[in-house]
Picture 1: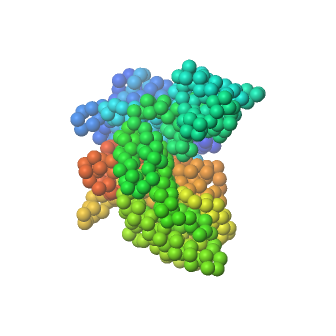
Picture 2: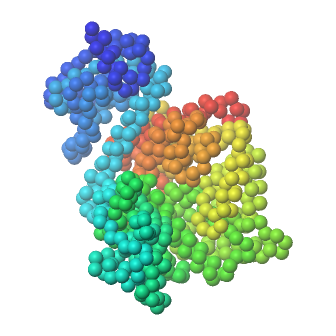
Length: 633
């Protein structure tokens, strides 16, 4: 009867519910039932490691750690169907945390060897355990960061926790697009609003008129106030969903250079939000930096504004924003700065003889820049004919040289490897870029693979974007059915393993000035980037960012696709760790780098890092198995 009850319980409890009926019966025969009274300490921090996995049948337990100062930090509450003890006996040395019964609690106990056997032989079971563990740890990391930032005060964190539906003005004032400019202005004055929604004859939103429209399109041009307001309205209505976070609205306003957003709730107009609303919410807005950039017309004017970008990034890190959110906002600001510098340079030099596209690659191309590093850019221009070729090369040589100097003045140092548009090799017409990629793919030599990996993550920033799209389309054709090329990419992805020792410790530099540290960019983030890039190419999906690639891979066929969700969480955590490390260095007036000392990490970050490295290794193992029969690997 006990075995039958146990099987019934396991059948409804993940991940055991994923096992076959016969397997459940076998496990149940080796399980026991244990009772813990309320207040009983089941495991004690730094005490003996657990020897059994405990699956809660009834009751609840509290998991916490105690700091060196004696402070108790809550890790988790676990109830019916949850389990504990896995990390403790998997590592096999000591218990990492204290677990206390919050109420009278009964647990099924499954022996260590049985669980380890399941993890080795059942991929679905192992995948669930690691995914659950990682998600719990990731949630806890961000909860801990947010709790710490409460000491600082301020409102920036609200950008990442508030949705637009909570902030948008619910009552939207509207008027007919056929009313006069005078009538529209009077409505705005009477209601004390800075924007007025305009509707067509059927009552559907058709445009918007703002204070700025009245200044720029009416007063400045001496327009007749009795004219139709629909003739001066902004017809393009940018919308956002009520469930979107406020930071997404801020990002959209910067991208489209607008100050008002319509908020849509389940298809219906739910309100309107302004940049002023966001500024009131957060106190100091990245929008102000974007507006300052737009107001400048010289490189000299951009220099002081560019210094504010790192301060904005530091503010977002301090307030505990997620790494993915931070890099997206900072990418928008950096792109705005770069576009303005390009526009100023082109204005000074005159129009180019052929159309061109300014592209960036590396972390900037993937929109994963943290505190700004060096320049990674190139010029792709239309294939010139005849004498235009010499004129194009002369123009873009001068243009690239000026941009290099401008970016250096804006705090972006030159690339030590000279992978910049100022190098004639990396300012070429479309046909030459096609030959570059074709040669790299066909050769598949170590040097060719390195060049491919550097430039594959290119992203157009300004100019004729169609040129970049044509190059991307050509590249997709070139890599199709290239098994040797993919095997070489896989080999490159597998050579860079995360620094995890055989006993579960973090491997660090043994000597030199970096002794006791590891490079989080090269040894932790780069393997995830390589895996995502390879898997995206296999699946023929072409987003530029690592997180977007991993999102696209979910549900698709590919060696690393089953790990896409976990790798996205790993990448988010590693980027957060890197940002926090660099932020601390800047606060200490030190130059930010990527070398972390594991001994300086909190217990939670250290555990999370180890779990992350295990998942990276599992994904690499899957890739290795897929390509093990190809001699090129």
